[in-house]
Length: 279
Image (cartoon, rainbow, N blue to C red; front, top):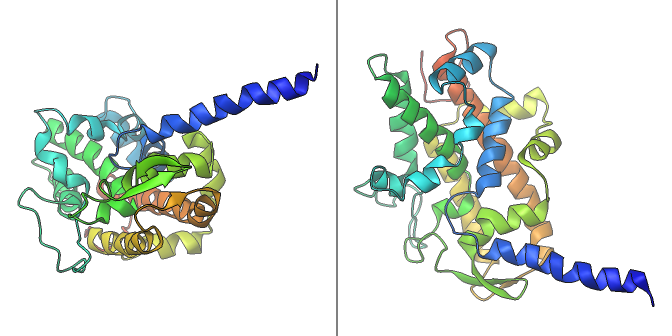
């Protein structure tokens, strides 16, 4: 009896089952891992003053603790008003700038409005807590390419593909399946492995940025995703290899930009690098 062959045979279904569990994941923003990674990258770039202020405002909890909270909260009656704040829908015959603003708002407006709450000295503690949780989440969402997807297919939720021969949609693939297939890491490992840019490279990502420029940049990636992933595509190893650098790039962009935004809000001695918070 070849025990090695038996063990290999036993492990294969387990691996397949682990992968299949990703296909059943609901499509929100980045999955839990993505939001946690963006927040943890940001946490590693906060000034001591900012870190202390955030800890006080969040009653000792970290921004990672709250990073994915809004994906669940937006489905409750209390926070249902924020459902459309996670994305900006741009149909194929539109540009980022020509896409109409939803009456209920979109992600660019939400980042701008919630940052304004954080900067408002007259805002209540409760309002600032909520705004902080939302900003942390939205800086992840605005860097997820399918959050700039078509209204006609609900941001890719109606764009059918296969993932290793299993039925799926392109939004769900980008939320969780693709990042998890790229690297089977914890969020701390993601930060440790990709958050290694030089000061010059970091500055190029952060300097002069605005929610408008971030969304537009992500939209350009979204267009390429649609163009290179026709409906019915069977996504496999080559697709993962092609898009893994983009996943890494978007996590890092989101984390660095979130850190700059939070430092700009909470540390009076910090000079904002972004282009929309003015002192």
